[in-house]
Length: 372
Image 1: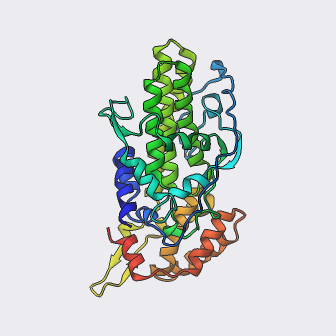
Image 2: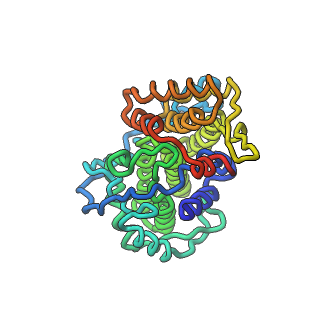
Image 3: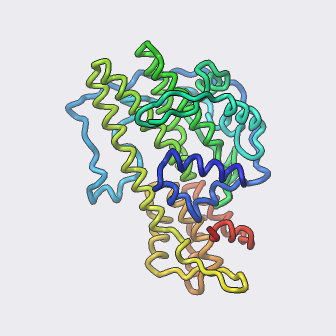
């Protein structure tokens, strides 16, 4: 638990104050370690190639209007085709098999991850991602080299084969390590005298971000993948601008500009279903949820209508609490919704809902979720 709270603090520095609020309360529980979930050591990365970026017709390039009313119904994904900037690799392996081995608290390669983090060195400012400098792995670090071909795979899937689905206690990958890889490739690419070498590192960071967002299950994994894509795009923009490659710079600028709206809209959508303000604790320690009907309807809509799985997942975790702590008839309606979700065509949503239906929350779990 301590390790994961430390991760939350580090992530908050990267993602700014809005995301610190976002991860409070119910979301903070996602960072709590789930004991007993251990990944097996991964084999060598399968052979892979990375296609050349798809040609971009600048006459067709648009600036997505994330501030427009119709954007409220958009999935929180990039509207610009990222294959034009950094296509995914073709590798047939599951990149999660490698990354899961480093997870806290019991990943079989966690000691190697900690040793790598101890090898970090301070790098000069990397504008705009790190205006005061940042700690990165040396450019020839062996773990950084080992990670590279795993970012050339086409798929990253953690759940449920590598990590179990446990509602608010669903374990997460070692995202601090993933962030370190991203920063390190940005630093190495920034120092590279050769343009193509720099682009290879920057595009790898974007691919890592795309892989982290691909599964669309755990919110914090998406929140780490999002800045990876933005950092890579900003780095491409900066290098392309300096070298007079204006077409590439323009494309990268459009992609980078989509990052902040997605982050803020994520905060808004999660705040709309937050339960913390409605939690009550009596003098005897009994906890209840005094939830307005409008907030319950927002939960229902998020759980059943959101185009993004991660928000349906968050809503289901909140419904788990409502089904135990709200007064009737709201408690019963929450359970009915969980039953409906357990029959979803989405196996991840269904499995998570079944876990919530079968798992009563104890006093310590409620304290972790509601006492903050």
